[in-house]
Length: 108
Image 1 (tube, one colour):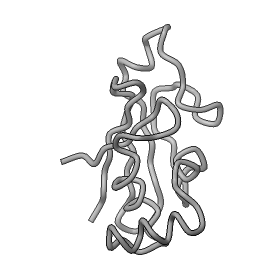
Image 2 (image 1 turned 180 degrees about the vertical axis):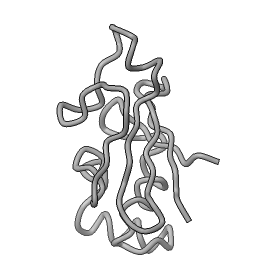
Image 3 (image 1 turned 180 degrees about the horizontal axis):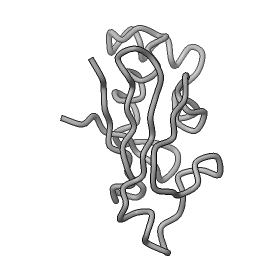
């Protein structure tokens, strides 16, 4: 089963992030975001472009949105999500209160 999320920057849709069923991740900008000259890239490592970015592991930009250490353990226990389920933790914790302008919301 593939899990998917919508990525937002300051509440505006940027693109999608997916975890493949067999492993690996895909990030794709929405075309409207790419062609908008005022819209900036999510990160320097993910410059705006048409087409998907693929990775065997959760992209560092999104991984770094996760809590670390004791905070991650507490979140995992309270949310009943495996501490090593990085995508699950991202979906559960990066919906509203993130440090930067990027939020991630599970796609229904």
